[in-house]
Image (cartoon, rainbow, N blue to C red; front, side, top):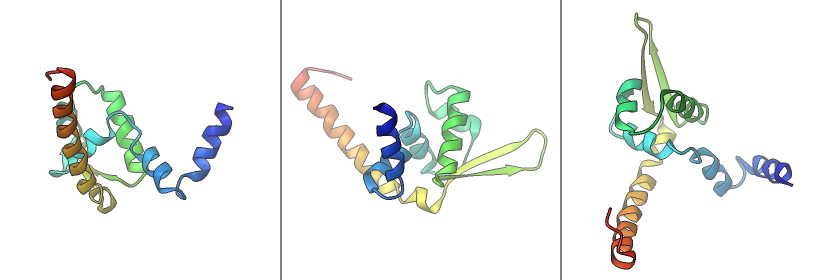
Length: 121
């Protein structure tokens, strides 16, 4: 049953806008990676320092996935030690206004929690 659902979801990738977006942005760190690259190009270590709690292996995996989806680009410089920089592609930059909406919603939800749940973050 689970395999059939996964197969159906994969068959909708690139056809259904919701399934497509969900798949691209499903990684735990995806939105934070894109957020940090909004301001410009970053090297791997710079990006890792900006994302509290992400491991080197996980960040590497997430960056590769985003690169495979065409959301970010990786530039490798031929020097020792190797220098690698990451930046948003043109289609990656298309997500910036949506990211701003996430931020707006996040602030509204934080206020909701404070007002209705007594939660103080």
